[in-house]
Image (cartoon, rainbow, N blue to C red):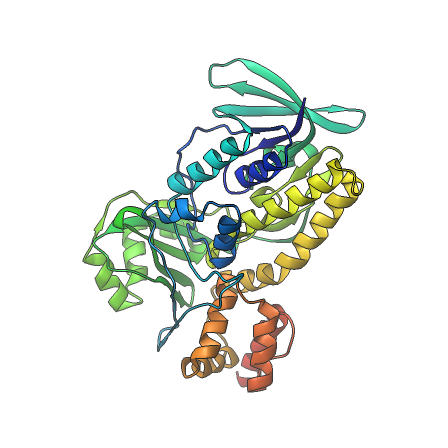
Length: 416
């Protein structure tokens, strides 16, 4: 019998396995795929996520993978661009954007080195229960053999289509429909050493430097336009880049070296992340649009929170269910402001006049520009920035970004 079985070995599952194994627990880590293996991803690990890697002793491996170090962010609003460096968190200001073939393999290897048992090509078919609690898994290996394993807790780290979440009927809440959809590909010969955002009405696109001298060029559009865009992906993709002519020229001067990757399955939700004998972490328990590229950092954060809660319960510092309930409370309180801010951005609406005035004010204030980029990267709490912006400009209410953005829309309507 294992202490924990973790289903899913990517950005949430492998770190959870590492942290629990380092505490001496017997951990089984399973995944239906084998590593290295690519997956759709935003790539970006903002400073909060990099700080986790540093604490876990894995940052040097990322740096050695030839993923370029990025320190600055550009946010181009059309008439001008905001360029700066997000404030550091825990002394870390570095940004990396490794390919998932690189990152996930590093995380999986770290879990194995910590003592977790890894089974790749191992597809979970169903969960088992005993006395009203989840007690294990039944899974099929790549050879076709069926295996049954038991554990004190089964953790679903298997993404937004989580088998674990589905079988325990985990409830979604604060749900928002898919707001945007995305296509991206990889290019060589495109100069880029910063992370670049280009928000436009109905579109968002950019450049993300990644491994092997390649850049990822993502294009986002409103969810309602997905079918039309998909009818001519390359043509619509390049037409979107033309909204920023200098960027389009850079990209067209390079060479696309991979196919287009795309998805419209991007729901926004919180999901109850625990129950009798089970827990969820990463996208299995919480997901939002990738426009702010917070997914990897959120997965790392969730892994630390959940490992701490499981350890508290298993070591009898407090009842396990109480510890897991606290995991949910802490997760939601920490992530909810960015969730709201992200959903506001993912609507891809033209900024109202008050927000335009804020951007104009930032353009002449480097310190406040850096703070705004800190909101985007997750190094500065959303409410902290908008509260100070409100005090400075008189245009925004203090508090959450959602209230600030709603106030902006109210101002816009008053000007119509």
